[in-house]
Amino acid sequence: MLTDLSRDLKPIANTTMADVVEVRLREYLKKKSFLPGDPLPKEQELAEALGISRNILREALSRLKMLGMIESKKKRGMVLAKPDILGAFEKVLDPMIIDKDTLQDIFELRLVLEMGLADLLYIRKTDEAIKELEKIAKEEETDTSFRVQNEIAFHGKLYEMTGNDTLKRFQIMLLPIFAYVTTQEEKPIRGKVSHKGLVKILKNGTKEDFKKGMLAHLQPHFDRLQHKNK
Image (cartoon, rainbow, N blue to C red; front, side):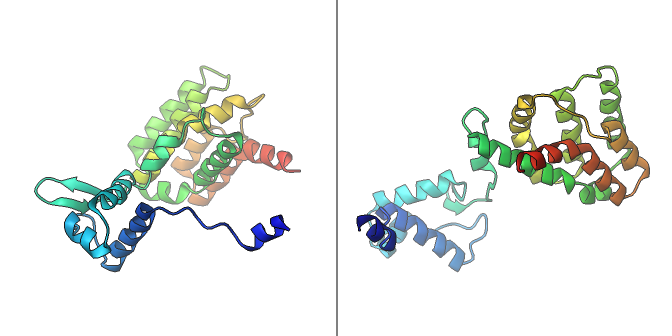
């Protein structure tokens, strides 16, 4: 009976006053269409409007600061910050403190991202960048064994070539995850299209050719996932 009652009457969230104030401040910023750099009302004005103490207000504001939503400026007070959408991820993306299921999810996310790189690569690729890729691929020829460092160098350069700063930063964050998951594999297998093959496609092939080549390059990872889910 108690179990049924708990399911029907969900427990009330243990919400603090600071939680409520944080939500109200978020709603206020959206309602008034604040933009990065816009100053917030003074603490006293906000506290009086909300009917709370300045201590509670400051706790809520500190949370928004930690999220990178607001920042303090000399002579201007609190202003809306340019959002750092990846800041929180950077603090927790450590393979040593993440469970195996989440590590696998993040690794799969990287696979999906790399399958979609072609569109940006074919807009922003340069001869100089392709030469750098060729150099990385050529260095691999002197070492036929699988090296995580080679994978990181080559794929990292591809992300850099997209010219998308957020994508590049996200890729750098994923490097420890990529290295960790790859080293856990019993026997890394190379795809049918090598790094050298991908460079050749990037130089002379079409965007669709590159997408097919990347799929062939990453196919062992997808095959492993398919086998795992059977």
